[in-house]
Length: 310
Ligand SMILES: Nc1ncnc2c1ncn2[C@@H]1O[C@H](COP(=O)(O)OP(=O)(O)OP(=O)(O)O)[C@@H](O)[C@H]1O
Ligand SMILES: [Mg+2]
Image 1: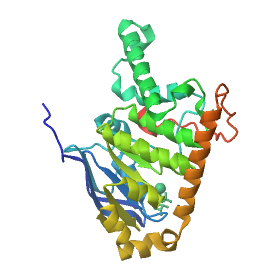
Image 2: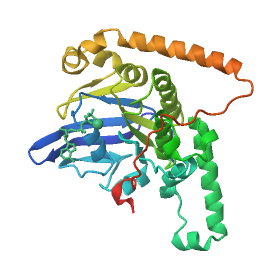
Image 3: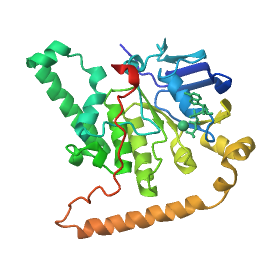
Image 4: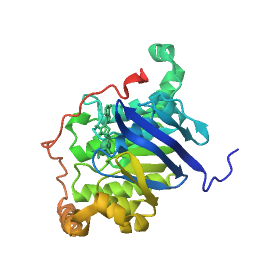
């Protein structure tokens, strides 16, 4: 029986180091994420953020250090990490381009379905029941992220921002206790970014802890209970948004001029203008809700998710 684990540690990474030949991309990084937390990971390009995620998720075997999830050391294999309860999205979107939106979410569920090959081939009652449950669950997730109306669309036809959301739904399909997001708002407009902020809060409210990498400082500091800063592979500082925002070393190493200037204010104005416009459009749209053709659709590379999951 699990008692109410209010401040239990979900993720504990200690002394994680990753070397590539002579390059130390991540150097002795400690990081914990507790139940109910949203933790941010920031740092300049090449600081080692994605590499650190890859160490957490078994894509890389760290040169040194260990990673535990809810008190158990994780084996460095992506599918076992997923099974244990950590799900992730990728900086470069990895969807199955020629599968539908719904199918992409179903792929994310495979670690949680125990129907084996024979059951699937014979399509017995056990399999059909499991399949129906999976579809139901996948549709709930699509409702949750606001893509249920596009369940039958091919994922490559989705606009970029929706592809990022779909990646989140697919990650959630594995029923994680911790979600790792690698630049979830990259390429999004300010309105989509703000919606993603709300989505991450909603995910946290479902009891899923979140660790998120982002370059958008407004997004990070609005969202996160704690923020860790990586610079050249090392953790420079970790603290609440207020502490990190005000730290001179962070400002010097990372935030610099752009954060001090006013681009965010411009972005905020843009959001508000866009929202006002959307509200007007909603009011006008009595009948015609036809979707725009996916003019800006990008072709997502079809990857076999996480190489060795097969
Ligand atoms: N597989 C690899 N082999 C060799 N070097 C690598 C490998 N993966 C990452 N690196 C190097 O490790 C360093 C950290 O890269 P990483 O992608 O983790 O940075 P990042 O903080 O995610 O940057 P960004 O904000 O641009 O995404 C870089 O110098 C990168 O070139
Ligand atoms: Mg990265």
